[in-house]
Length: 327
Image (cartoon, rainbow, N blue to C red; front, side):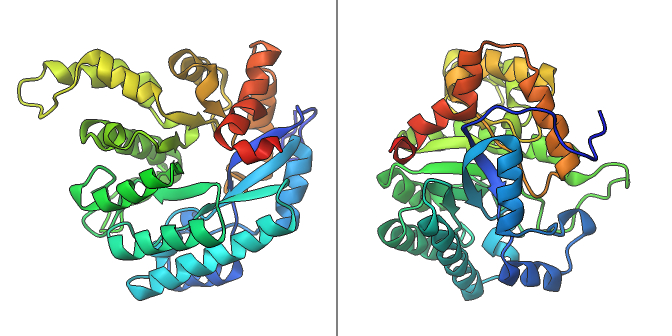
């Protein structure tokens, strides 16, 4: 099939939990920061999103601002950027709430005061579908299980928030890599895995049971490596106090979107590990170009599972996670 054209067929009623918006004010900040070409936002408009939604058979899209989010600027400017992004997304949602939702943007989680302030403000005034966070923060690359972030998790637990975890690139100088290895292709899956394991072994996930975490891109390599990860209970030098069964149970407690993960081997491993009730549809538009979307969607549509299981991934699981979509 010529994936430069479009897909052939698609299920309907999908809920896309991994779909980014690229507002002009944020795009300007990204360009001003001088990031690499792989991180430059692609062309986006709400109309482009709606066209892709129609092509994929998507009923509802939950928008989010991708990495580095409001952290593209620092200090108080990050708080202002987060507020601006949330006001922008809320306006889109409010015009058509059955068609759009949004995950709230936060300033750096290391700015715990600013992050908590934005959580409280946004949940009070805009009632987002959840929040998006990134796998690491700051020049020291602070992962999500860091003790300094505990106040933020406590606040999100109060709100029983759905939290989409999106991989991030390091903010400090990066390890040199050959040009053949694109960070967003080869490193992002491992980055998601590191963050998930950190949440488990730091007890962050178990200590905040009312937060529902979604891992991007089929959980990275977590479903594939879980057996190896669970061996840490046997290592005398590992500061881990969880059994194999506890580690695996917590890992299965995540939700997983299938953005950029339509390959049959990936899907089979994911559903076998996570179960059909914890897998969600995602597109990663506009960062996945449209030919890539058609390929991934065709692979997903052709994946050999029951229609009931496919319906769960496409929309039923999301309607459980986001009850307002049942109205």
